[in-house]
View 1 (cartoon, rainbow, N blue to C red):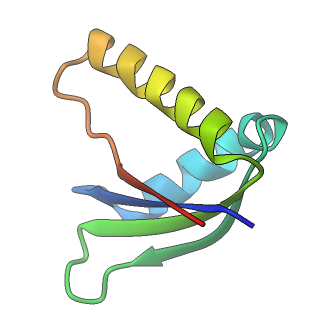
View 2: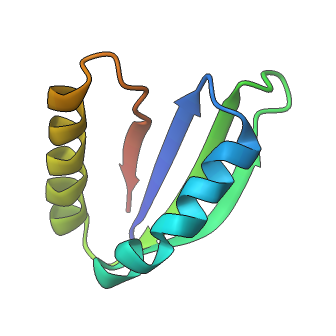
Length: 86
């Protein structure tokens, strides 16, 4: 089962948790399911979250599209670093 690991800096864990909870239905509709959310023990400004995904290619296309749109709205938007795992 493929996964997607995201790392986001300069965000409070409670903030990203709320965002992920609000986005859960949208994510599920696209085959993206949150499995774990962590705060970096060495850097409280860094959150890591792991999703189980149905398909790497379709998830990559969706995430790239969402990030591109976010960057058009705000070139300084804080976006996560994404890694896809097999």
